[in-house]
Image (cartoon, rainbow over all chains, first blue to last red; front, side, top):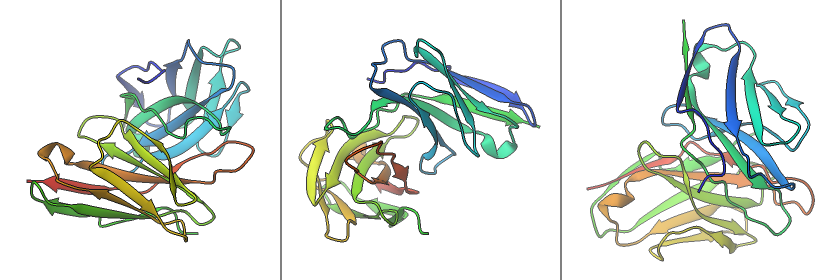
Length: 113
Length: 115
């Protein structure tokens, strides 16, 4: 089972920031938080990952709480093309551990004009 | 730099038949993972191949088998197809380094319909 809890759906106005929350209260010290998104009928797209520090790349920012029990993915200026299902995944890094990603149901983000 | 590619894009088979799906990893990657995504669900892990061997396997029957070639490309084979095997089959590639994270990058998928 997925180790994360996400809202089923969210709406966001075009041009505004989209903030997608994720709860992972049972996260272990060596587990990372990964975010992927899947636009309809396409393969999942990697967005960002983090361990405990906040991370930013050209796509998004990832804010992880100090206790690491929750995180927020931020799309700073959402566009219609950001409409997708967003998956928050917790997994260990390499080190003889699991190689798979466990997907939950994700959050369906709808960006509206 | 080519990303992960999969073939074919779509496939229609009948119950009881066998199917082979193919995946070419992203340049520089050495590991291939396969996932099944039923309609309306998140992807489910089937297995992962590294150094031409199955490294880890999810909860899928033996009808699902795979192979990795010396050039790191991979095949997914499904025997005795069932209607429930209809799904989007996703391949993800990664670099299984000795240190650091293994981030998986997905291909566009193969849509399989079993009639």
